[in-house]
Image (cartoon, rainbow, N blue to C red; front, side):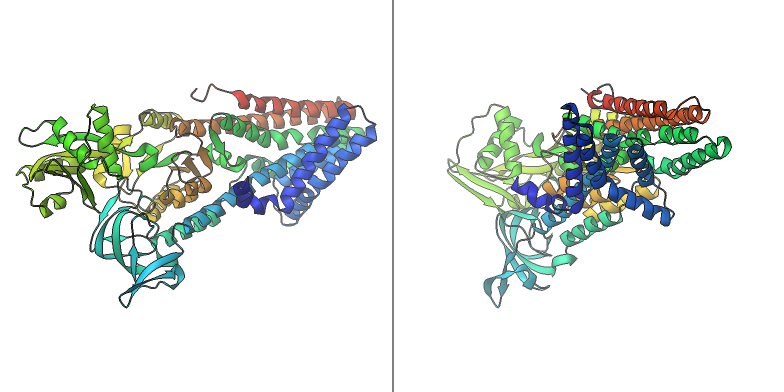
Length: 628
């Protein structure tokens, strides 16, 4: 609850939220008093208070729009509110006002989450940094670090600057920046990024960039820029409001001018009161959002749901979205007729005490094969290169080719060809050696989600015309993963800003783009896309804060569900609007001809609103367009 308050304090303490909450409370009290049989003016007065609280700002906004020659849904809502009050429909007037206010609050919550994403990105850089100056290590605030400083980063610490390694070795998880699925070995001369995690080892880094100029700082700028420049969504109701509002006023005036019949003109205004048209969109949106919530799809506001319904292209991050972000053993290559099981057994001995992701992949494979791995007599990690263990005087190594060379292990003639073959398949090779002899190579790769191929087909079936996989990994890995799930187009070795540029290119080509991601490095792309969709369990808080739709469970099939749900919500909105327009036009015709008297016009008008609500309510439990 404390976290919720901190995240949304600005919205929850705003004037708009107070007005919306007060309007809702007054409407509820009025409805209860009416059902309880209190005096007419008791519950009516409370309803009128709700209209005054909720409707005043809308009417003022509508008047401002007229002065600026901008006709939108505010004018429609104002007519609905004023006409409903004139003809005694006080509760209806208050309900219409509340629906508009509630939609605005949902959008404010979304904006608040975007601000939180920027704050969370900033927290990736440590506030205090160890700097080596004049041969001595000292702790200084990150603000005092300048290019040229030597920064010391130890195991478990986040790197605070962009720079180049001048000494030391380490295994660095840089998924937050590049999205790479495997930790990267860093040695002298390697480039490192602020915000990445030193998993094992010590690095001395010569600073090249700090603060806003780092890659992480540029990411924060990209997120902020994308949020500020995101094109406003033109709501369906706004399109119709431009024409409907002046038309009904002209028709009512025309009927009076021709017939001189006040009742006929009054009946036209009553029956044309656009309550059904006004609630056509919000009732469908609320029903669609509720349907999604029941199925683990959290949609942050009606505007985002409408935008998702127009998606024609999808960009998908690889690590953590298409894949699980958990490496597994895919292939074992052996030398000199050594059995695969023997290679795995030696590798598991060396990795049993390791905390590295690749070591865990080997241990999982050993358990799967039923191996009973003994504890090594000695064990140590060579940062950025691998693990070394000793058991019964046998020296066992698992790691890079450099690790084996440094320890004078004999390398087979066919090793280069084997490594090239594994790397061409997008696998990370781990060499296994014992007592100076190379036994084999274990190929490790990130695990592709089992249901991903079906999810891609579902997206194509939902009307998406273009699907692109975007990743910071190598082209070999990208090609293997894309091929495995049925994606024809992919882009590799992308930094966050390059993902943003890729999405901008698709948008310039006329596509409405949805971005599916889970990581910190996806945040700028999620913000730039017309719709951002984040994985809920494996996804980072930053990704979820930036996204417009969050999948509560890591079920990628729900990604297509979210798009389909949005399509059908838009379809329902259009049905509602077409019906409301037809119903209003029919009523106007009947009223203008004198068939509908004012009292019957009011009944006719309310029937249209009820029909729209009923049609929207079907969305709440609809199942036929969503995977069960």
